[in-house]
Image 1 (cartoon, rainbow, N blue to C red):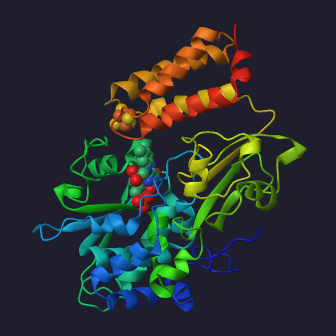
Image 2: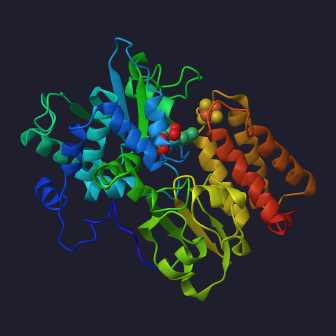
Image 3: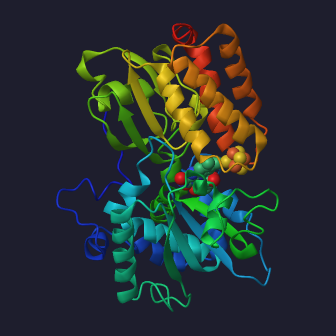
Length: 415
Ligand SMILES: Cc1cc2nc3c(=O)[nH]c(=O)nc-3n(C[C@H](O)[C@H](O)[C@H](O)COP(=O)(O)O)c2cc1C
Ligand code: SF4
């Protein structure tokens, strides 16, 4: 299986530096030039027509989100980029920022122009120091070349971009918690409505988008909506960056068309299971989505196909585990993480996460029982759908899926 290169087109070339000169040599910033000759609403329409869906996890259509931005409010509008990338298994946005920051910046500038936004923010996970440095260097190059500043690429539209480091809280990846954190408050998800498109950063119209989402935009503007659509099955347009990790021979971040076969990704691109072991399970979309068994992975890797087999594509992070893995321990690690990262506002997430962790701790110590297994399943189910943000579901979904798919493993941990 080969990659389909759009975002990684340049970085797969030996010796590519990712600086302004090399990016321009590869045709970079021509899409910005083209977009600036269009009306902002036409740019939004092309993105809508392309079928681009947000790569941050929810897969919400980007053009549609942009069209929700409140207009004529007399307030500034903002485009805020989510580079928090905290979902376990996901490691693609930092690749873009470190190796191809200008393609991201070009998409970001086009987005700001389309939304009439004169100040954009990139909220970067605080630990990503090399990514932040590369991004800041690329921004400085743009100011020096007068691509950014009083006149965007020489066009009568002022744009400034600020990089803001986060402080390493997973919950600050949730878009409204991110906005609170960006405003200098404790990062906690807000009650919605109002949605950010109406009252986001500093109560102004705001769109929060993922790094990869914006990095797909230059191709869409340059090559057209149909070209992007053609890179995937209906309703699942484009290429996406897939973070492949766990017990495979060749883990890595790969760029693939939507809809390629998940089994082929693991056995062909990923070189199969390491040390000749057997596959036990796959978490196909970052650690919060339901696990799949080996006989469930002969499926297209895209939003809709994974839904049909009861899971999700989330942030396109595939976590593979082999026959030697103790899934009870694995689930305990996941639940501990989500419980630790809960902001505590919602009782089902705060308490349910904690009780699930404590029950699982018993299982890890071989003190499980049929009653505790039923309780764990019930608590997991009660968290889902009853919280302010999706972190509650991220705790409950793996619990229920692991119990359903591996009941005997839990029974082998009874006291
Ligand atoms: C707990 C939690 C953590 C999240 N973390 C991230 C993240 O690190 N990066 C990201 O882009 N989206 C993350 N999201 C999704 C964002 O809330 C939001 O949907 C996304 O940034 C929108 O961008 P997109 O439309 O381009 O996908 C998270 C959501 C939740 C509930
Ligand atoms: S679901 Fe959890 S993390 Fe999200 S707002 Fe509620 S308590 Fe906070």
